Length: 289
Ligand code: PAF
Image (cartoon, rainbow, N blue to C red; front, top):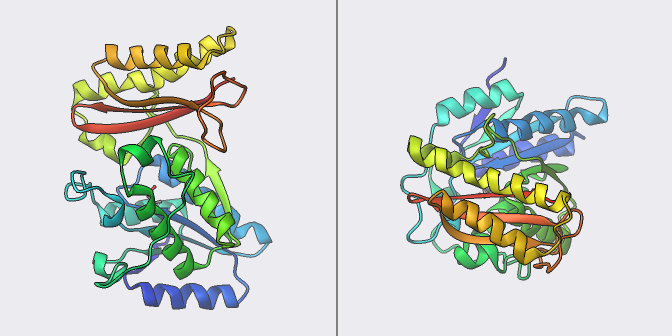
């Protein structure tokens, strides 16, 4: 197991990746904010596989950067969990060749930075409504990481369903020419979706947060029995979250690609949930049968 090359300076990273790309190497990228868990590692292993897909060894790379521009003023930027040493060991085990981990946010957003990427429709509603400016920060940093890395393929988790839609729209509209791959949610054996923010939960909050995956399972069962009314499905999920003491941010049933709310569940409609357990806001989602 080889430790990945660690690069902290974006300019050196860009030179490294440009040289690889110009040498004909296939590049697969996973962007993260660190504090890696099995969900990230599933993306990294798939990046390894896809980098090598051309029949010769490619470059599987990752970035670790807690992006300040996607946090609101009252959010958890200062206390966001960090563990660079542990993360590098995990990147090594997942087969990454190199990792960009800027040591100072000013390396990515220098004083005077004034260019922002706004994905208009996909950023509306849901997390976009609850976290104003969040997707502008995500789209801008991902666009910059794409430009620094120029990957052929980039992988993102489906847990952040709206983020994936925002990135797909950005890549399409700005002609990045990068294949975007969505990867399934990874869960604990008891159903809790993996998230770096799970580290904030007390044992009691963690137990109550199982209402998220429980509500999704109930909605899937109801849909399988023939319940198609979105209002009824949403009400069932909300009741389950509230019964567990969750403070619901939103419960929405949407079209999987447009994210437009639907009145009747169709096969593939996505139920999106966001709720606070204690002070920790968690999201989860699932497609209906
Ligand atoms: O999903 C994340 O961890 C972040 O939003 C991302 C895509 C790395 C951008 O900072």
